[in-house]
Length: 108
Length: 120
Image 1: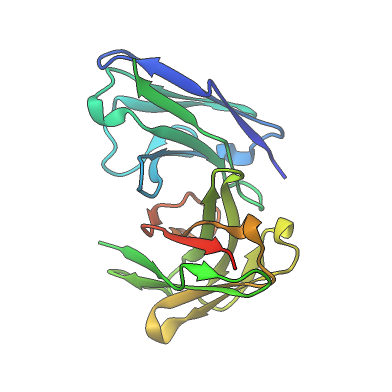
Image 2: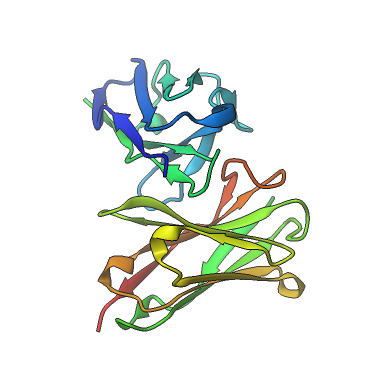
């Protein structure tokens, strides 16, 4: 099983600032099959990024993904009030598909 | 717009069987798509349970120790989850989700989730 870890656990920022979230895999994620999701309380996760760097349909360009191999990053520029949420990474290169524990971006 | 909706009992007795159904609307169930179950709990976070193809081919997370069966009913545009011998550790919010394009892909559509509690 490819275990994913995320850092930091919590990121406290103000609207308008930028966020950098990290996801590290215990094994290489083949083909960069790495996705990022946003989850708000009481809601299902929402796909933001797939293939490590491709934005899903309707996702604003202030969200960007990068990385390869075992180290991946989600960047959010100019945080909007609706961006304060929990963010998860997920690898879909090899079953069992696994998720990271999440990074909470909250309001400072 | 594709929509997924979970349904089933919110309370299951220990050692019993958890049974949930996901209804798919707004799109086909029998195209080149895989249908998944994922659960989320404070203790384990997000955990992939398994997947099924419209042909009935299914794959499961080994961590669930052969307790899982996922099946599909194309005539009803539904797929289902059965988890046997449940314990309190199976208490979670259960989501159904879709993976497009033949299998190895992200979850692009999710149901809203249904909470299931295992308790006597």
